[in-house]
Length: 338
Image (cartoon, rainbow, N blue to C red):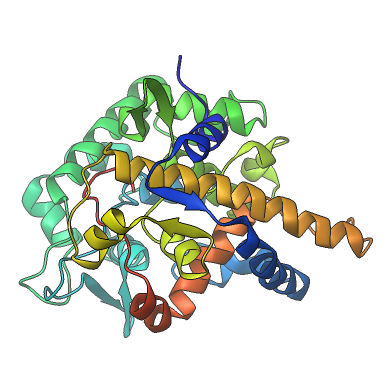
């Protein structure tokens, strides 16, 4: 039987050989998260990103589903130019470059929100849609992205009337049910591994899909989930990097050497699985510590869950990219899961 992401986090963190959680470093990080929460920034952080759609509509639902279907592996090798997309005079990198490419295509009249259009995309057409500023740079894993778009389009058309809103409707405002449906019906979201004899799951893209809907719709309409707190953080290559930067994650000498030397860690390898599992559990503890601070202040209004904590960490890395990159390398795993 598969462990849930939350069970996975606990199991891996208790049994990890190469990655340890330094709980003594968490209270000071909780203070930073607490301060940002009190500023009110996170409740509109999704809409504050200029590439994100603002309308509370079904088209936004389909935009989120498309983007999170393709939300993985934007890093390039050392010495290789980054994947950069300039849209309306503004250059974007990483995930935001993907958003910019999708928005550019929509503006050019290519309706990527229509699964019939997606199902007919060719590799050359996809190469043009996701073109970078540098003609010699291609978005990583382009062929895998095309395959995912084809698979998802087929499932949407055959099972859900061509619209992801129908997936949401059958789940009755349950994040857990939607997570299960997405992973069952759309195989590219099946982010799992075997660790010390147990089937562990992370479901990074599936969980971030639900979280993005929650943020985009501010917990209402298509973003209303009564159990949103059941989600964990989203174990990618950036959030563990920030946690290690703050001293919350400690790597042994062998693993640290691999990261410093930019070695690739295979998807499902013991090092990669331990980084991701410890990341999830560290965020669980971070949320608990932050909630304690809120409770101590008598604050019952401010929300703190793994979605918000993950958002805080991810945005911190973008805001202080130079400092984080100089102090702590990220792990490099080329895969479709993150």
